[in-house]
Image (cartoon, rainbow, N blue to C red; front, side, top):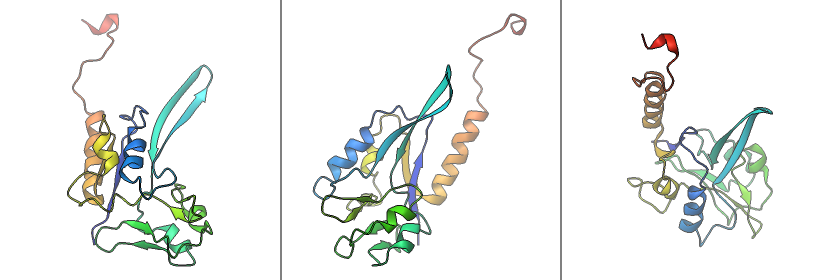
Amino acid sequence: MSQYGFYFDKEKCVGCRACEIACQIWNDSVQTVKWRNVAMTFEGSYPDVSNVNVSMACMHCGDAPCKKACPRQAITKDDETGRVTVNRELCVGCMLCLWACPFGAPQLGIHGRMEKCTFCEDRPMGIKRACEEICPTQAIVTGKIEDLAKFSKQNVSGRLLHDESPGVLLGHEGN
């Protein structure tokens, strides 16, 4: 089994919400609540306050707590891709999956059944997910977890080992 998932780079996200809109458009016929949500978090205290945009959806966990919590076995994990999906025919809307999910991904839809990101299950795995495809800054990357882990390490090390000159030179550094 391959486990697919998301990599999100908070340094690249500008909070444009294009990923939210792409998800809603791609899943228009089945989605009644937002499956991807961009939230802004704040750190610090006035006047030193900073913000970070975070694009959240179901993380399709390797050992999905929402699946374990579902008393109706309405949440399943695909053996081939690791996708975690909700079967709305079996779901009774008890919301135990929402309470178990550390990301708050499952949401109660207008039909009284839980809904969440399907990892664009109707798109072949060789192409980008809708949220990744539309992201103008490439803050969202999808793929196999082992590839994303390598990508993440390269991304972080690239930030630490940059060869750029400093943006500001103090008087004694120019000599």
